[in-house]
Amino acid sequence: MKQDDVVVFKGTAKGLQLVLNDKIHYTLLLKRLRDKLKETAGFFRGAKVIVHPGNRELQPAHYLELSDILQKEYGLILLRWMAKGEQEAVKEQVDTVVPASPAEISRDREPLIVTRTLRSGQQITHDGSILLLGDVNHGASVMAGGDIIVLGVCRGAVHAGIHGNAKAWVAAHRLQPTQLRIANVIACAPDGAKPPVCPEIARMRAGEVVIEPANLR
Image (tube, rainbow, N blue to C red; front, top):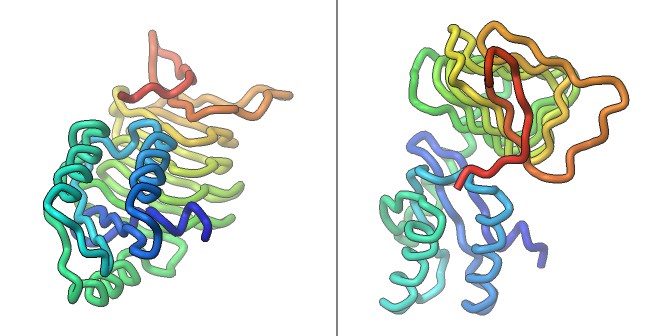
């Protein structure tokens, strides 16, 4: 079983859903959950999440332990535990969150969660912040009025703070954009730059875009 199949974050119309595989031992599940959250370098901190434990029969102590990991250790906001019968309904929501169209425009200032990779020619524009669970390939672009978080490799063009918000920032597991803009300031990758080896964050400092290792905790 692949590690990515054990703990899965999915975007829904109401926020994040955390699906826990019910086929592996509980102790291993805890390890994989901590590993997954550690890999995201705090990107999910403050996010509201609904947890689906699958068909696993959790004891009261298990609920407390999982809640502590999510909320106390990694700063997520646990809304509720999902009942077994809700699984199919949520799957339908997930399938309709992101339309197939290459352009997605929203006037809602709530964070937009996108659960797919953007390919060349595709664009997302949103007045609020954007959380993208996938890659931004070369030739794709993401534009947000707020922050941009890419839980994957960012090789396309990204523009945070499109309405002039200089406090906006861009973060990614691997930040390798062809062009990066915050508010009205543009930063291009220098020729011969080495690929990043850790999650990075780009933000404004003294009127310039600075890229540094992400430490969001």
